[in-house]
Image (cartoon, rainbow, N blue to C red; front, side):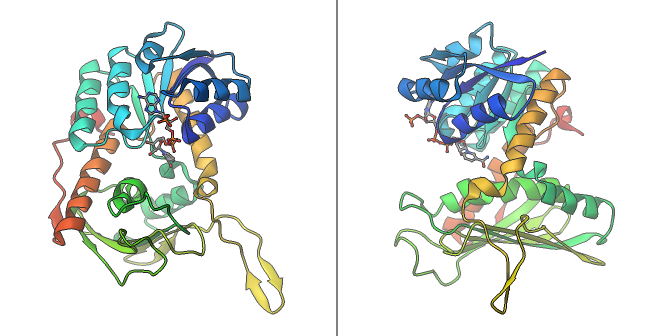
Amino acid sequence: MTIRIGVIGTGAIGADHARRITQTLSGGRVVAVNDVNRAQAEAVVARLGLDARVYDNGHDLIQADDVDAVLVTSWGPTHEEFVLSAIAAGKYVFCEKPLATTARGCLNIVEAEVAAGKRLVQVGFMRPYDKGYQLLKQAIDAGQIGEPLMVHCAHRNPTVPDSYVTSMAIVDTAIHELDVLRWLLDDDYKTVQVVYPKRTRHRFEHLADPQIVLIETQKGVRIDLEIFVNCQYGYDIQCSVVGETGVANLPEPQSLLLRTEATLATNILTDWKQRFIDAYDIELQDFIKGIEQQQLSGPTAWDGYAAAVAADACVLAQESGQIEPVVMAERPTFYNK
Ligand code: NAP
């Protein structure tokens, strides 16, 4: 059985997902594509040698009889309408983050999915599929470091363009930690605060960089998350979980250990696309497998909603300088594990 997939939005990640479905993964085939820029969709079809129809409109693609499942990889503000449309059509949908640009929009999707009575949505949060984070979670769940008490995280990029503004440190950057830490700790957030250290000279004037997000979880774990997007030296993701009896650190990406000229060194990645490259493959293969088995298991619409609520609270905290509560709706039993 081959799952026939339609891709809405053939920009950077849409084209890359189409490539992995075509060249790397098994069980799926791209049969339809759409982009507001039709020439771009046609170029992807030509480049990948796809036997796929190009649609002028994402909704027509969703309705097509020969499309079993939809990938929403268009611009964030369009995600909600396409995901709702796929749910209404009873089709499985993989939506890149953000699920919607507002928490209310995410809740609309949650409500539509619950009303449909079947899990149809997977959100493109890929870090839970990363081998390193999975090792961390196994250690925590097995009790190897006792109860987690504190988590120290860093999310560092070498540079960002001048279109990157202060709130993007949350909605584009910290959003990945906001998702993966809930999953890692099996916990929800209670409060957030954002504090600003001395600013780096290597930034555009309008941007507060670095920032520290301080989080308290419902179980009382304290998380400090450094966001530093002009750190110059590399793309560096750190996560250290301190428990009652030990500490578990996210493994570094595999790299040659070099001894030369009185130096012991390993390379640090600079391109974010390389850091979780295997996780992108695994998350999408899991989506295809979930459709085959009629049971999705990846990040849910509820996870998309939870990340959006936390991000909203963090953006508020950036502006207010205060400790802000993270207030979520009651979780429908539909999403109980
Ligand atoms: P991108 O290169 O700008 O691609 C988005 C594409 O969607 C563009 O080709 C855009 O066309 C098209 N588009 C906009 N509105 C549309 C509509 N109404 N119907 C159909 N197509 C439409 O951006 P990207 O980097 O691929 O990001 C896409 C999404 O993936 C974003 O939400 C981003 O946050 C997410 N993402 C997630 C990760 C991750 O780590 N999980 C990584 C990268 C991106 P125009 O260019 O003509 O506007």
